[in-house]
Structure formats: structure tokens, C-alpha cells
Amino acid sequence: MSMIRDLRAAVRPSLRKRSASPYQPYNAYDPTRDPSASTAVVDCAVYRDGRRLEGDGCLTPREAMRRVREGGGFAWIGLHEPTEAEFAGIAAEFGLHPLAVEDAVHAHQRPKLERYDDTLFTVFKTIHYVEHAELTATSEVVETGEVMCFTGRDFVITVRHGGQGSLRNLRHRLESEPELLAKGPSAVLHAIADHVVDGYIAVADAVEIDIDQIEIDVFSPPAKGGTRGTDTGRIYQLKREVLEFKRAVTPLTRPLQLLSERPMRLVDPDIQKYFRDVADHLARVQEQVVGFDELLNSILQANLAQATVAQNEDMRKITSWAAIIAVPTAVCGVYGMNFDHMPELQWKYGYPMVLTAIIGTCFAIHRTLKRNGWL
Image (cartoon, rainbow, N blue to C red; front, side, top):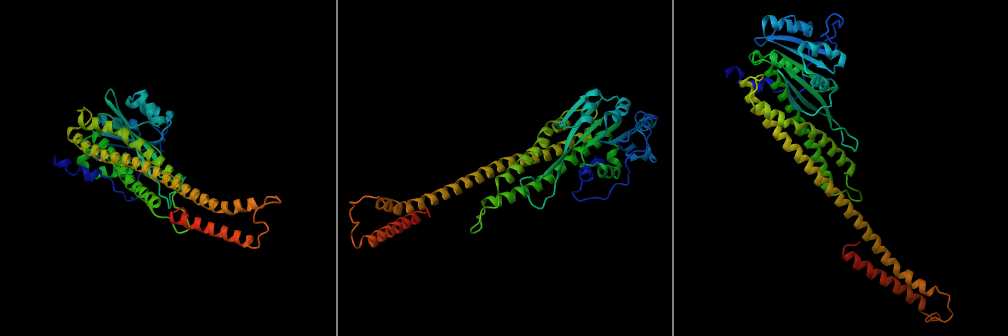
């Protein structure tokens, strides 16, 4: 247990930016020479007793597995957006199931855990928060990617899709803790799961700030003579981004429960208990995301209610002025009729009396409406 006591500290990724990896893209292979070679391979290494073997920076997957079979250990092969042709040789070398290979190549999969013979196939959705100076109705808040992981007895194959979610820094951290890598491929699988869920936590904290700002804009009083600073489009856009976040988090709950509760031959018992910690963190994020969705629903309804109230206030003002204007309109309409015999037409004080009556009546109506809050 002492070897894994600091497991959380070793695999927990920092949210700060780290320096670029010294490893270069893996593009030095000749596909005609080795069917398992692929320009999509980012890194390929053999780990024995938790340490990376020297000279593994230019191995092909076939050479890596040959070293594993000769001397033990396991191979960790990382790929980025491989095509069917690029992945075909690797799939044949490691005996990967065609259904899992198809999912890994074409991506756009739900988070899941599947077992094919002696291989575990795990899909993770990575989430990246998109920085923006101001949230608008077209702002992109979260950006998604995918990490697929094939875990066998003596190999780990990671397939990454999207521009985010690089595993280079994670590989470096694990290489600095050889007692963890000595636990085998399941230690890598746990580190990837922990890395992905930690990304969820960081994004959830950032999204919460955006929601708080929207909430402040909706419920703060408008500036004098102005309108409220929030429109429905901003709220709806943020709700759509939260929904995308939710689609990445919620389906991962079941796979992590299986990894933490069900005994598996491919998962070291000392590592399995730490999947429970990852599952707990995921449950917390899931509760946050569900809360975000419900809160945005409430904010959206409140914003629509405020818009309705504002429209009602405008209609009351319009109706009030229409009532005031109706008085002179009615009086002038009556005395504007072209009849010869009408009362008060020949009266000396008729004109000033009518004007006085109109002004007095309009003033009284205005006072009454203003006292009742209609003006």
C-alpha cells in the first residue's frame, strides 16, 4: 500500500499550463515496412518495473510488443485521430475487436465501458472551457473531445480525438512515479479517468462563474432610462453549452461504477479502490451540472416573466394616455358635428368653459392613474 499511497497526488493534473512535451509527433515510420506503424502515433514506449525503457522514443507498436513479450512489462501507445488505414495494422497486431476499432476511428461515441475478450475498451469525453471576454448569444463555452482507451494485460492504447485533452503531461507525471506504473495498464487507465474528471471539475467551476454573471444581469435593476443587460439568447446559448457538458458527464457514471465495484482481471485490486474516488468526484460534478441546468431554466423563466411584466407596464402606460386623450377627442368630436341647432354654440363663455372642462378632466384622470401606478 505504501507504493500507491500518493496515487492521487501523482495522477491529479494541475490546472496550470505546463511546458510542452519533449516528445515529438510519431511520424518516422515506414508503413510499407511495418503494418503496425502509423503516422497517427504520438508516442510509443515500453514500461518495465514502472520505468520507461531507454531508446523507446522511436519504436513502432510491433517492436514495442516484441520487447514486452521478450522481457515483460507493458506497452503504452498513444494515437491522435488515426484513420482506418493507419489503425488497421495496430488493430491486427493487438487483436482488437472490429466494433471497438470502428468506434475508436470514427469517434462521436457516448462515454462507455465494454469488454472484448481480454481487452477493456473505455470511452471518455474530454471537456475544455473556451475563454471569452463576454458571454453572447453565439459564444462557445465548452469544447468537447474524446479519449478512447484499449486496456489489455500488457498494453494500453489511447486514441485521442479533438484539439484538447492531450495526455503528454499525464504520461510525464506517471513516468516520474515508477511505483505507480509498476501496477500495470490499469494504473494508466485510472490516471486517464482521473485526468478527465479533474477537467470536468475545472470546467464546472468556470461555467458557474458565467451562470452567476447571467443571474446578476437578470435580477439586477436596469439602469435609469435603460433596459436590462441580459437577453434570452445569452441564457439559451449557455443552456445549450451546459447540455453538451451534461452529455459528457452523465453517461460516464456507470462505467466508473463498474470499474470501482466489479472485480476485473485486467484491473489491479490496489488500483480499483481508487476508481471509487474518481466516481465520487464525477458524482459531484454531475450534481453541479444538473443544478446548472435547473438554475438556467429558472433564470430563463424569470427573464421571460420580466419581459412580460415590462410589456404589461408599457401597455398600461399606453392605455392610460389613450384614456386621457379620449376626453378631448370625445368633446371635440361632439362639437365638431355640423348641426345648426346645438346647445351652447352661441354662448359667450362656451369656448373657455369647454377648454377648462377638458383640461380639468384630463388632469384628474392623470392624477388618478399616476396614484395607482399606471403612469
